[in-house]
Image (spheres, helix red, strand yellow):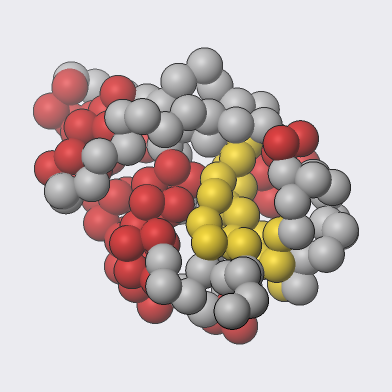
Length: 144
């Protein structure tokens, strides 16, 4: 049986949106795709509030780590590139060796939320739910 095609989800820091999208795409479509995520400028760790809101949704991403795109570029055959933030869309290479299609589905960056912890959590939960809904129905031809 041939290997499942790899979807690489890109963001800038690979600490919030792309980590959540990776987890949800794996949950909803892991039987169809291999899924990974990376960042154009990865942070040191996955954002603790991203870990918390994903745990609320029954998904543990606490063992995940932000990864640079260099771990994938030219090293693993990436069939589909899914970009989930505007900065990564602008800084990501326009062509990716072996990539069949590039999709762009931007989400607000919850790490930029301001206010009290409950206010920040509200933003993280909203973005989490938006990503969850998008990953349920994502298909390569559905990206913009």
